[in-house]
Length: 102
Image (cartoon, rainbow, N blue to C red; front, side):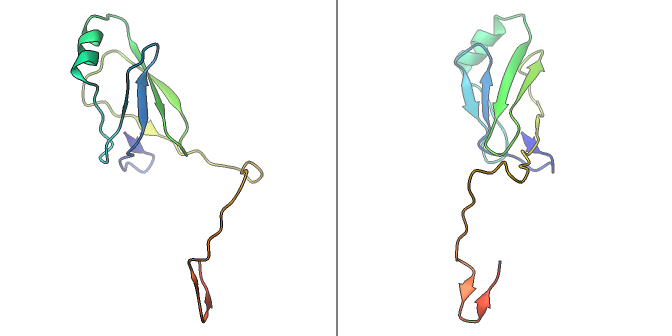
């Protein structure tokens, strides 16, 4: 799993549509499903739909023929327009005696 900048995206939730099977990407953007899932999938002939989601990225569904590595999925960041944000948090971590910086 990688972002638009080709860097890995950790913590992406990946589920197989129509099942309870879910996993998450690791710090390298890699994921795998356990042996039970692989056994279940080996008995299916139909294409799979992976539901991919993470906060700050656009959720998407990816059609695949089979769950065979390497599988590369690119995540597109969610861009907010002015007026879409519900709240903004500002901290004072950049203050010192001479002034402030951001």
